[in-house]
Length: 249
Image 1 (cartoon, one colour):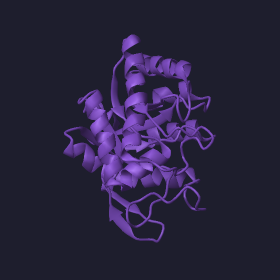
Image 2: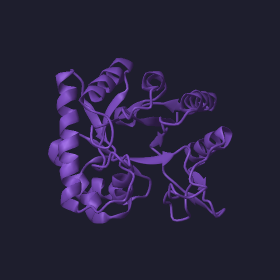
Image 3: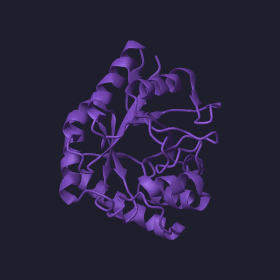
Image 4: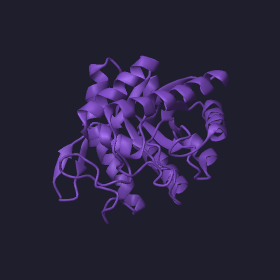
């Protein structure tokens, strides 16, 4: 049976984390820098543990004004420090709550830099391994972070996005572009189903390319996130596709 993981970035103040939790299989928890704080980290850890959802760290740039999405200057050593501090804190908090962190997914601009910059990607992978070599890395399908993670001996998960469009080189369409997001629910579900079933995606220029998917990102901060999550789960179930955390596979 085909299986797929559904991950969601939580603890960022969207307001419906509790409703989304039963519909996902991996939670990426904001680590108090780009969003969230000590309290939201603990609350989200507890919600994920109660729901049987895999717990992940979601570290970002120190940029609350831009919510970690602005492409600020970043050196490999700075990237490593961001990972060490944020992931380390979430791991410690989870341990105190009797839970375990299973994976790391960088956020926003840190994620995008890691997908393209081999030095940043390696710094992140090295830092994650130094914290716990059993941690898995989530990164953009075909991106540098996955290559760096494998090279450092980490488990990796190739991520695709339900509601984002792609360029012909496999990169995400920049957020500032008018066509960066898929706003039609049926179209977004269709993109996911084609990726999962056929391993194919259509770029904005009409070209198609193969793409590997271990996990689907479901954005949790949109007003229709909950309705979309229900529809996606229903469509996957109808197609006989099991939804399961990739770290449990």
